[in-house]
Length: 203
Ligand SMILES: CC(C)(COP(=O)(O)OP(=O)(O)OC[C@H]1O[C@@H](n2cnc3c(N)ncnc32)[C@H](O)[C@@H]1OP(=O)(O)O)[C@@H](O)C(=O)NCCC(=O)NCCS
Image (tube, rainbow, N blue to C red):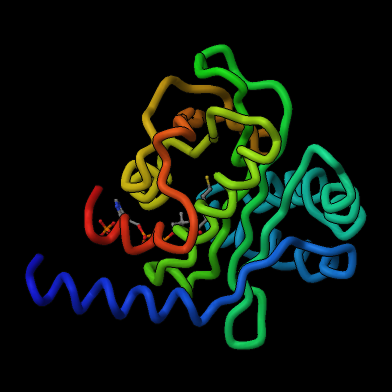
């Protein structure tokens, strides 16, 4: 490996470790609701404001987050850095679209990283936590939906080893567009604290 790549891998590892990762608790619900709504709007700013508002009313909010945190089929992981919430990931047991052929699918339902933390390895650490949570649910395949125009997220998931297996509808308020469906076979997914450096160094 070239010196520059090594230096980048080291800087990346140090930056991502400035975050601590833990499961969400009931008293995180209000913070998580506000963070989720803000990062959703940040990500999908191309949609009309009234569609975004309708979507947020249906899918975020403190009561909704409390229900999800208490749900035994849902696992939510938070990354804190600099004294504030920096990112979260959520996996859930439930039905998968027909294009997900892998056995025992578990959904990576949400992964949102604060913009200031993009490119610093926090997302990789949350993927590692999500893989472990999916395995603990008895899963063998981690699958997700990602908006077809979300180029950064698609590049990130490809880098993590996800493969594109099809498409499904993505509805924001009254606007219907298209999500790609991606899958990762968990027996081939790297996990644990070494995951970020494995990604950086190439698999
Ligand atoms: C998606 C997300 C979790 C990825 O985390 P991240 O820390 O930004 O990811 P990384 O920087 O490690 O990887 C992103 C890759 O996309 C590349 N990229 C950046 N902008 C891009 C673009 N416009 N088009 C294509 N690739 C892009 C980066 O270069 C990087 O690849 P590289 O490491 O090979 O250079 C984070 O960006 C995020 O939370 N985004 C907003 C919310 C979101 O979209 N969530 C996913 C919903 S399904």
